[in-house]
Length: 293
Image 1 (spheres, rainbow, N blue to C red):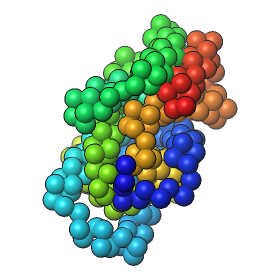
Image 2 (image 1 turned 90 degrees about the horizontal axis):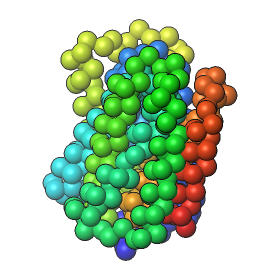
Image 3 (image 1 turned 60 degrees about the vertical axis):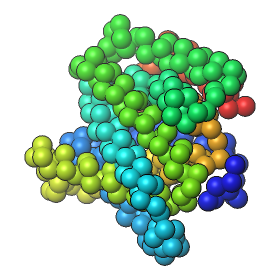
Image 4 (image 1 turned 135 degrees about the vertical axis):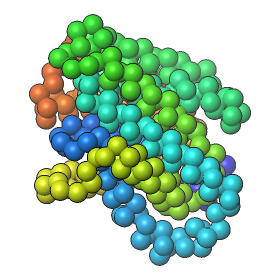
């Protein structure tokens, strides 16, 4: 398949590995921040736009100017879906454990596989389907202790439900990106998506009355960290990979995020994973290997 950036400087699977490591830090940075969920999400995306917009304006001005109205509309839809994903998932982390929230939000392959079949006419191979099934089984195993004991989480049912909403909206974001990225270069595409996403989050945050200023320097550093790590090296690399790999492979690879986040939560937040979480993580990695290899 020929795409606007078909000459990949590195292996797409290697790029996905970098993205998984980057997005694994997201839940930790969100937990460390004391700002309202919508404010955290807004500044994460806004700072990502600030980092990428100069590159788009200097090196991709012509590509930006020639994006069709149809693709602009689709990219805008992806931005709204991404805003809904961030809003629901960031709030989820206020109510349930990192392991449960990150694991459930990565149940998106179920929705991606159905959407790819219904909308993009993609056929999921038997190997990929088996890998998704194995990975999802690992996710269930990782989450079982949180469902049964809540692991000290204040409102696990609410948090888990919000994480599933985040999974559905993330699937919509991935599927939209898969269709548009076959025609639009990476940087122009993500700048449009992130700009719409930031605008949507701003509208909702202002409507709720969340304060946008008055935060200490530590909070601004956390917002910037969310943009550089999970934003630029995470979601942006994921969008790049979507031009070279099937959407189902990209999505199932992101199931490595719960494993990375759980390990980081152990060392940085003191959240000790249960045995089902550890075993489930190993199964998730096995499913990723089967699907992506």
